[in-house]
Image (cartoon, rainbow, N blue to C red; front, side, top):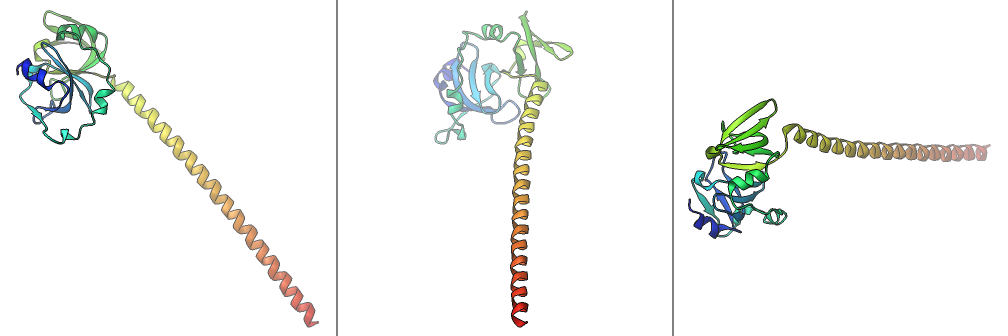
Length: 200
C-alpha cells in the first residue's frame, strides 16, 4: 500500500486488516516513509510496516467505537524511518507481530544486516526485518503478572476492610438488640411485680 494513502489517513481512526491476529483498530498518529504509528486500545502504540497490510477500513460514522482520548494521551515523536525507530527502541521490551507462530517477545539488543537481535528470557533470536509486520512496546510477562498480583492484593485488602466493617456493624447491632431485650425483660418483670403487690 502506498504512503500517499496513509498520509491521507493520518489523524483518522481505521481498522488494519479485516481479521486475524494482526487486525487492530486505532488512530493513526504519524506516517513516515516506511512505517506508520497507530494507537490502539489493546496494545497501546503499534508501529506497522505498510507492505504487510492487506486492507485498511475507514468508518464513515461510528469510528468503530474507538475512544480517541487514548490517542491524545500519547506523546511520541516519530523518527523519520523504521531503522531510526528501531535504534530509538533499542533495549526496550518489544512484541513483534500480534499473534501466531511469527509472534515474538523480548528485549531488542540491536539491528544488523537486515536482522533484529532479540533477547527473550534464555534465548537469543534473530528476526528478519522484512518479516516484521508490526512492533509494540511492552513489558516482560513476569512484570505484567507482578502488576496484576499487586492489583489483586489491593482488591483483597479492600474486600477485607469491607468485611471487617460489616462484621463490626453486625456485632454492634447484635449488642444493641441484646440491650433492648434486656430493657424489655426488666420492664416486664417490674410490671408483673407491681401487679402482684396490688393483689396483696
